[in-house]
Image (cartoon, rainbow, N blue to C red; front, side, top):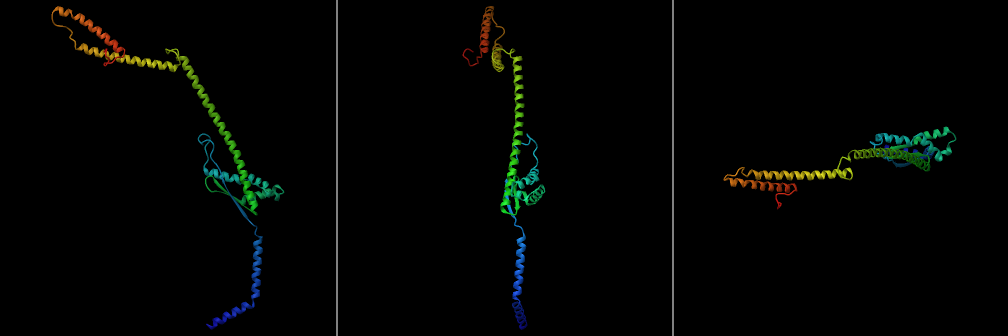
Length: 281
């Protein structure tokens, strides 16, 4: 135990005697670390979310087949980070002050392509992340990308709207032609068959009147058939000959005449539409 205590005292004494050397080494390491950290360039990140409407004015079955959502997402991502758009960003921001030739512009475009990331948060929602040396530059680059994309999207919407309106105009012209053909067929039908129908007025009026007359004739025919059946039933109950003297047989002539007159009146009443409950019947 005493040996360990002695070794600890010796170690502490050695450290104390070399304290200034240890402090100098620590300061040297700190200075070197600070110098190394100071050489690391500052990187700032700016993020923005963009909602993109990817639905056409007309349905896909009427206009054109729609591509898959994955293809649309890839197309938008490539459009945002295309060389043309990145060149517009370089020339429209403070990066234009750092370029003097087309070669410098190409280098800046390549650098921007590495520092800009476009990810799909949802189906129609995209996130743009831009990394730059200053917060102002990062925000400016992100805003410029959004402005360029919105401008191009509006131009595309105007083109799509014009195409959709042109398609609707063609459809209206086609329907108008079909309507004109139908009107021509109706006029030809009237010219051909209007004189064959009795009465006055249009074809529809004459057809309606003819149907009414046909219904009335059907009713009269049914009434006549009913009256005939009733008379036949009454005649079936009358004997064909009357037994007795000749005087009685002679009297059958006026009876038959009376019966015939009654049958005529009954048939006339049936023809007028009278039913069994009518007083005259």
